[in-house]
Length: 246
Image (cartoon, rainbow, N blue to C red; front, side, top):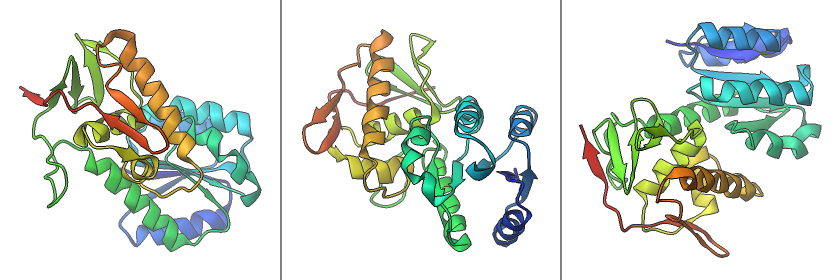
């Protein structure tokens, strides 16, 4: 099993996290230097990252995590002092998955990580659909309008050109495609894509929708497929059926 990496130089934090996560079958690899995390990610396959914000400064954290986001296929969670809560939007803007302030309950942290992995697995094209859930396509690629959703490489392309979606933008777009024609509230998108109910963080959805629209508009004819429903949320145009490709 690929390890979870914990960035922290606090022995007590490592002991507690290691104990709780080991009981769930996860191996925790502790790294004390933020720069060393970059080397680990470059040279090894890891399942996800727990980042202790209390041992780094803001600029260093944002710079490194932004560079790591496209290199880590699993969740990134920031553990931060309570006084830093007001800065969480800066981290959500670079597509980290969760910002948890101390003190927190370790069983809750384990549950959060398990839930985030469930969200990531939910978008795996090889998973079977559950009863009542949108039917998932058992193909490596799906064509929607003039763009191709590639589940093998987790990218969206137009005429072979990679639109450069981040993992969270990819998940957001696929979630909208699965619910095309249905108006989705910001809270529904937060829960379905980010995997949590985060009151006051609807701006996170708006920012990701804006980035997604910009990337679709760069080359594709699908730039207007995501429509805003004022005062509620967003809806993806349902005019285009999904077509599986070999």
